[in-house]
Length: 97
Image (cartoon, rainbow, N blue to C red):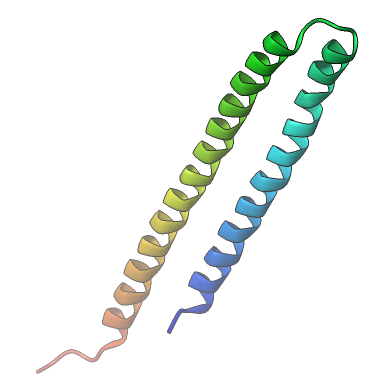
């Protein structure tokens, strides 16, 4: 059973992950605009395709890194919470005589 602190940690992790996904979607749509304009102006499909591929790869890598860091921070936070709770429980146990 997860503690309240672990539940809060999980909620924060999920919020950051959803925020990163939303930011990525916005980033991709904004990055798409100049490429679409260049295509409409007739600057060629091949160069725009290559730029789009580079952008997609770069944007994806950045937000995947944000999600990975978020997961690592959540794991670290949960480890700290578990250790703190174990120490708290250990401190409350009566000493044997």
